[in-house]
Amino acid sequence: MGRCYSVGQFARLTGVSVRTLHHYEEQGLLFPQRSANGYRIYGEDEEDRLQQVLLYREMGLRLADIRKILDDPSFDQRDALVRHLEELQAREVRIERLIASVKRTLQSLEGGAPMDTEEKFEAFKQDLVEKNERKYGKEVRERWGDEVVDASNEKMRGLSQTEWQRGTEIEAELKTELIAALEEGDAAGAHARRAAELHAEGLRLFWPEGLYAPETHRALAHSYLADERFKAYYDAWMPGATEMLVKAIDNLYDE
Image (cartoon, one colour):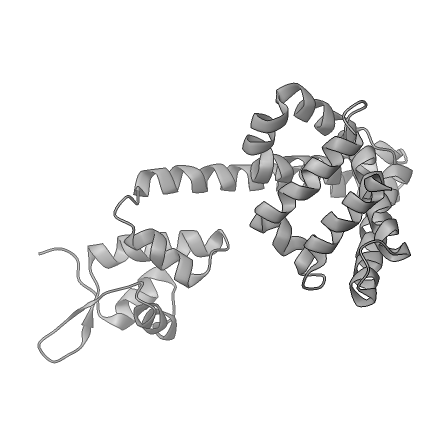
């Protein structure tokens, strides 16, 4: 007979509270056996299952989504672990880069050589490039090609402090104008037009030279409607924001 634990023993072994173990059971994530007197018994299967639950929780997934993944007959535990390892290694690189930046800042504050602009923002720009690559890299490279994506990443890394700050300002202004356009209810009004112009400015700031054109801008905007990630991003500002932005961009070039 394999390893067996009571709920208290299993909680101490795994570092997961008894209450959380019960909750995972209620959510269909764990299935402990029952002894003759009705007490829960956890074994090796529950060890493996809980490990997967905790790994996916660490990756930010909801419990309902984790249950669907683990109950999928095609679920591959090895593949899941490989992907999680890649995520952890990428996170390790980001943390090491930020640690180096903090150390360099402390040296500067304690009388060392002052940091130049590039040093101050290098870690943050590189982090953004890598996050975009992980999230959108595969599909973007398939659509635009490696050369365009690599050029865009290189341009982002080379942004000056002023350009980097402008990118942040564009995002804030775009949100304000898009919400105003929705409240106004006019995709051809002044607020909508300004939102479309700001979106275009942001693309020109981050895209490599020669890529921006009205047709590429419109094509990208329309792809937002079919991509739940982008739709959720803009609609989080206000329901209907994605559709308003796309209409505003169409109107900008139809004039």
